[in-house]
Image 1 (cartoon, protein in one colour):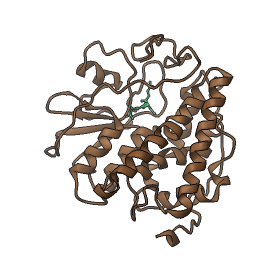
Image 2 (cartoon, rainbow, N blue to C red):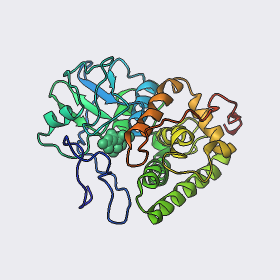
Image 3 (cartoon, protein in one colour):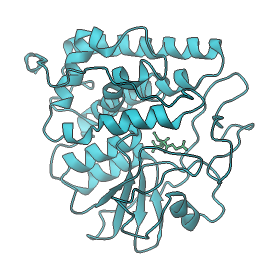
Length: 311
Ligand SMILES: N[C@@H](CCC(=O)N[C@@H](CS)C(=O)NCC(=O)O)C(=O)O
């Protein structure tokens, strides 16, 4: 956590101020605290806490679906709207494991006095009553290893390429849009929005020749990590985070790539644009104090993409 940051995990902190801003107005994401890895669990041992709103959690919802892990790993979806008390469970989807009202209770039980930000996704161990891991990049690999069903999301032959692409996509796109959107100085915003669009331009060039980012015949984790940001881009990041140099829909290559991934079996049902839009527009009062959720845009995610010709 940056030196001058305050915390929101503790109740009563000022929710209208983003605590992860450094002295230059730049957003610095906190490090995930729980980093254990788990072998394939016995059925009933682990539980997943997620939200459809969050791109990091969505990677895990996608991996769980693609790897056929829905029975082994039950999941609970929290309310997409957060206040100063953090993520909370919905009356219609209560916490079946511990009966918690807030996800913060899971953090407190795992690490008494935990005072950093309470984030999703969370992998919970029902046997040991604690969080195993809350870092989506690691959870993605764990879920991939737990099942031979579905595609290998981190195939050996493409690992070096996937790692290099992930690094650039994380900095420039996944976290890049947050750094543009959460910037509190004009300079920091302009610096970060430029990086976002340089990254998109680089991806667009790569994807003119390749159907998927790492050059593999099937989508890998590199594609799903990019997808979760691309699918939120025109609906949220263009307006809410001011990443508005152009839309994804204005770039035929990126739009085709996004549609191709969206139309992959099982993926559309992991995308909940209502939760996504309500989360961003109602949870960041420091950016959008009115809390008005935009009606549009009309997305064409089911439209043609013509990407099969690339292999
Ligand atoms: N490093 C984490 C980041 C997760 C994260 O930042 N999640 C956001 C939602 S998109 C969150 O829960 N934020 C709560 C907060 O900032 O208070 C991961 O990739 O799993």
